[in-house]
Amino acid sequence: MANFKPGLVHAPVTPFKADHSIDYETYAKLIEFHLKNGAEAIAAPMPAGEDMSLKDDEQGVLLDFVIKQVKGRVPVIAHVSDAGTTIAIERAQHAAKAGAAAIVSHPPYFWHPKASMVTEHLAQIGNATQLPFFLCSPPVEDVGTPLTTEIMLDVIDRVPTLCGVVDATMDFVIMVETVSLGSAKRSGFQLIPGTDYMVPAGAIGGMGVFSPLAAVAPKLVKQVYELCTKQQFTQARAAQEDLAELAHCLKLAGLAGLKGALRAMGRDCGEPRPPARALTEAEHRKLAAGLQAMKFMQAEPRGW
Image (tube, rainbow, N blue to C red; front, side):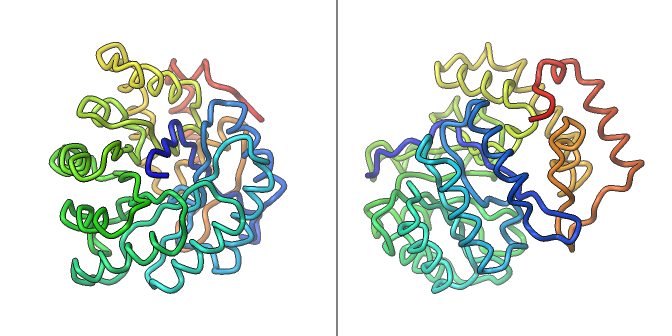
């Protein structure tokens, strides 16, 4: 149970129609794209999938849809975070019944409970099922209590199914402590980068990745992942720098950047839900031109 290793995890966006309803027809095509382009697991709906703008009933239906579409070809990891403990527990239990292979959750967001309360919140979620459980960093740490080393160590003591931390902080102290102190408490405890920066995490003992950029540049993501798996970090540096250039370009466009890049690559998944701002047509053209100027993007798949 605690030895579940997700590997190269793709974290897909959630496609929306013009009326902001979920576009399941496009979602099916997107999942198939991920599966044929290197995904060893699918995690949904992660922050890249706009989980915080999905209604409660949509969360469950979306997860059911992903599991049905994947048909057991790779593990599906259910993101079950919520500000309320009972809501997150219900999501975890739904994931277990639906056939998810694992669950992942971060501390409550939009309020600042004490560390002991966060530990209790995460422990109750982890113990609500027998599925492998992963902690993850909050998407925006200044709107909630951050995931600290101390919280992680307390949850390890309380949740036997805890397998590791999906870290998006890029904080080297936290990453090193996760590897060293987490492994001391539980053999095989994993540090998994929650961004596409695999080389820094891999160099200190991290493994795998939860990759949003795999939707845009799956070949480049897989190249860095495979080199890091072989601990060939020097050889991976150039490709990692290419990924960093791509990540920076999309970050400048805000939450809409990832979907803007997908549109430019011929895989239009609509615009993000409000309050996230959609790109203007001029911004779409600028983003597409930026991607076109990146020589490494020429090797990436166009369309579905």
